[in-house]
Length: 117
Image 1: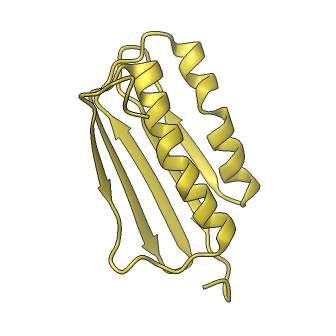
Image 2: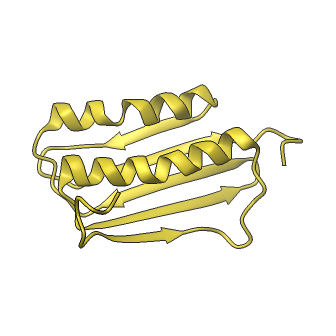
Image 3: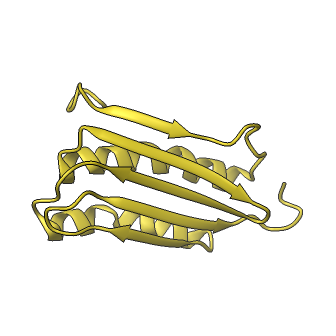
């Protein structure tokens, strides 16, 4: 993943202890991180990337942000469609702040159904 950008600095912020999440949410989290890193490198030429998972009662939030600069807006917006679909398939919301000559910021909120923990 980082071979394309060997100087990429990745920061990951996770709660301690990690919440015990249902398998579909774990799978989504495990896909969200590498896919968002790859897209940040590919579409924004980022050299720094930060990922944060927060848990608030019955909701988890995934946030990703880079320091890159989007040069092709239509390609970048389309690049996040699979992440959006994965999040929405689990009843969550997804927002990608993607603007020309700006870094990429991703945010997903996912419900954790009662009894799933």
